[in-house]
Image (cartoon, rainbow, N blue to C red; front, side, top):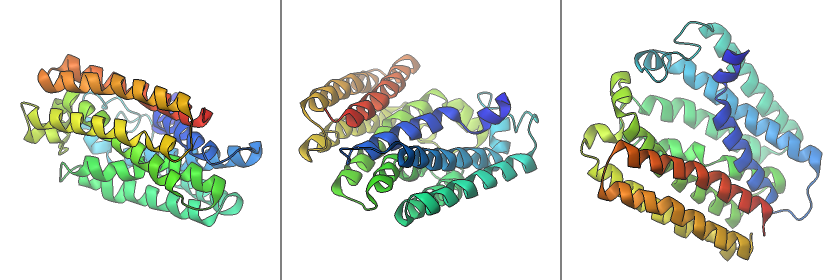
Length: 279
């Protein structure tokens, strides 16, 4: 059972569910529990399905990287056919639930996120360092899915949520790419640190995206989706993210890259909770 849970990438599912929750609550004054639970189930299900099938497609890469070699598929504790069937059934059930109980726009966006993650982003990781930017597109959709599940349409608030999630992913995953650059090389994945061994470009991009995130995160306040508590909180969280980013730019080391990653893991749930509260 633990291996089945690991296959779903539960941390990513939890982060996606929190983002979808914030997106669902943002445009509403009153929330009905059952539609909210149905939306979270569908979005969480499609995220889990994508995580399972991603591991099916990348099992050969995972087997070559020490960090992932003990995952259920490369270690042989779960069969490929079973994992493929599980992922496909979960994806079909999630899309069926969305089409039946939510709306067509949300279902279409779920299909786009699922297909682009598995069949565009996943193979690009073997060929180009631009995969991080491409993968950030489906990765930024959970709050948009929450928004469309609640409203049935796309508003400027949905685009603001997308921009926040998109920009957050870039410094987060660049820091991870730097920390595990040797693993990625062993796996044959094309990550930016491979082309930038001294980290000058990686650190500059982390800084640029962290600062851009701080500015874009002000949009929910500008669009009256959140109040002064959000404004102050977003500035504090942004500063807490930007400071380690600039430290890494000035002195590139694994320890400082790890600080950037940890700051990103504080920033995301913090900003999403502030959005959900709308205070």
